[in-house]
Structure formats: C-alpha cells, structure tokens
Amino acid sequence: MRPKVMWHLLRRYMASHLHSLRMGGYLFSGSQAPQLSPALMRALGQKCPNLKRLCLHVADLSMVPITSLPRTLRTLELHSCEISMAWLLKEQDPTVLPLLECIVLDRVPAFRDEHLQGLTRFRALRSLVLGGTYRVTETGLDASLQELSYLQRLEVLGCTLSADSTLLAISRHLRDVRKIRLTVRGLSAPGLAVLEGMPALESLCLQGPLITPEMPSATEILSSCLAMPKLRVLELQGLGWEGQEAERILCKGLPHCMVIVRACPKESLDWWM
Image 1: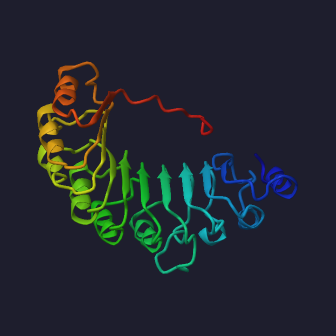
Image 2: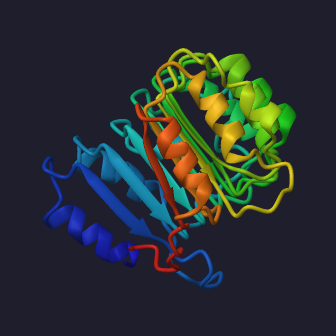
Image 3: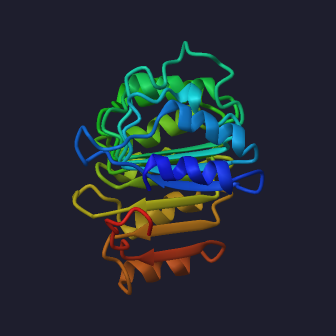
C-alpha cells in the first residue's frame, strides 16, 4: 500500500475502532520508492487513539524516529525492516511508547547491542522476540537481560548466539520468565540444566534444525524438565524426532506436560501470510 493511499484511509475511514494494523513498505524497491514518514506515523496515532498493535514489514524506518510512533501501542513488530542507530538509544525520552508490552525484531539487520540496551527503558515490556538479529552478542544479551529482569517471555531464534550462553543469561537474570523459545544451536545437556529449578517457567520450546552433536538426548531433556516445577508445555520443533523413540520417552516421562514434537513449518515469503 502506497503512503498516499494510507493517508486517504486515515482521513476517510480509520478511527477509534482500529486496534491492530499490519503494513508493508518498499525497502527493496529502490531509492525512488515511496517510504513511510514520521508525519504518517504521527497521524496514525492521532486518528487511531485505540491502536494497540502495529506490524511493519520490509519498511525503511531509518528516517522515522521511534518518537513518531503511536503512544498507545502495546505490541510492535518489525519484520525485515531497516532502522537507524538512533532508533532505540537508552538516553532517549523515557515517555516514548509507555505502554509497550511486546516487541518483535525479526530480521532487522541493524539491530545490535546498543539497541538491545535501549529496550530497558520500556518498563511495561514483558515479551521480547529476537529473530535473526546477528549483531547481538552474548555480552550484550547478558548485560541487557540484567536490566530486563521483568521479562516473562523471551524468544531467541536464528541468531549467532549459542543456546547455552542464552540460557545462562536467562537463568541469571530472568527469574520470572514464563515462556522460552530458542534455536538449539550450541545447546548441551549442561546448558539446558541451568533452567532446573526456574520458579515460573511454564513453556519451553527448542527449535531446530538439529545440527550439533552436543544436543541433549531425550533422556537428558526429560531429566531437566522434571526439575522445572511449573513446566506445562514442552515443544520440540524441527529436530526430526516425530514418531521416534525420543518422542515416546518424553510423552511417557512428562505426563503433567503437553509434549509437542513436530517439524518446523515452512516459512512463507509472503509477509501478509
């Protein structure tokens, strides 16, 4: 949708009844392609005072400051978007997005440790998804989670971080975390064991592909899960264990859990799917 069409919709149709909006940009269409503007984002906030979820795909946001986004947002999703270095600096206005509870950063190549540290000013934030944010380092994640101790959901998928280092940072700082989803790259039995005794963990998803020989066996996963007192959902995705002995071991050994073993869904290249 071109910005001029969006302006028309804002003026004629969009009002207080709009709660969720998904928009696509023109990031890969060349320098002459129309782009989202700060004025359009500000108008969105003014015309739609009840907008709670904004999902942006393939959009160039390098000239759109985060301060122009609607203040009412509770969920912000960025998929294959470009942002500037100044987008999430910690020293920016603390009143920006005061209600933000969930942020999804999926294939945002510029996102790095400094941006992650900037998320710590969102005191309402409870859910963070990092997908393919390859510039985030283990040191940066550990330092940021120390200040994001109030997170209840964390997903780290397709990043260069090892699963062991991610779980160690979680066990140190996120004692109230309820849901964890991560790629199994670099996961070992001792690494998984750091979650034992986590007091609030209810859902754990380990996502393939299975490429490391250190990957815990079904018996080792069972042992660690039995030491997670509130675990109710265990999901193993893309490990190739569907219908295998590993699945039977886990289902039998965790009768109090919903055990889900399945292949990874095929990723659609269509952002609207």
